[in-house]
Length: 225
Image (cartoon, rainbow, N blue to C red; front, side, top):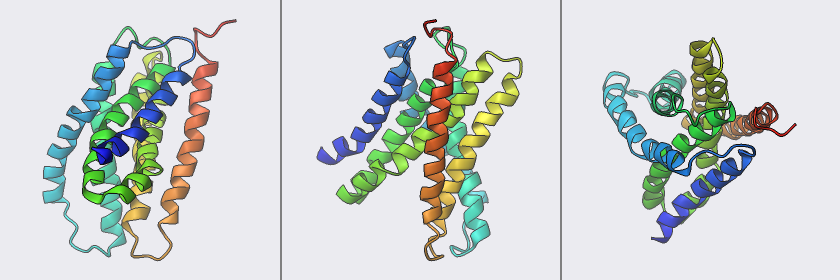
């Protein structure tokens, strides 16, 4: 039970932080919870189904191949996981009337991402124990949050733009780019010291995420004059 609480705790901290960054027009709690649960259940199911195909058709035959690890990081893992989140935001959250300002793209995308991260984190922590819980609380969980913010930033803009397809795809692309980079540097750990690239990419994603949140806050239609 303690391990499960440790797995869930960083997810809840991020959710509370993102919720209170929605300064001017809060989203319905029920809708936020629905997005979280869809991320925790449906997104995981979508990824599992995709993995059944990619694991068969894009196998790793040489663990020391940089190219194969690149494909695994960006296509097999990042694209499938971010696509599973994107589908929920695009077809469930974005059409809702409550999605009525650009920041809503961030909060709904993060809720879906945190749902996914919660399920994933519980599985990893139950297997890896206390040290895994501590490590992932400061790495993988915040990483999923930043991917959600970057995706949601553009999906929030897309809702109110004539270039909806282009902006939605930009959000998906950025999430895959940073997710893939983060994983890639961890996958090629057989190159000494290269894993530092994962933490650099995470730091850049965190910086861009903060800027994205601030920009949507500043441009909110509900901001008092």
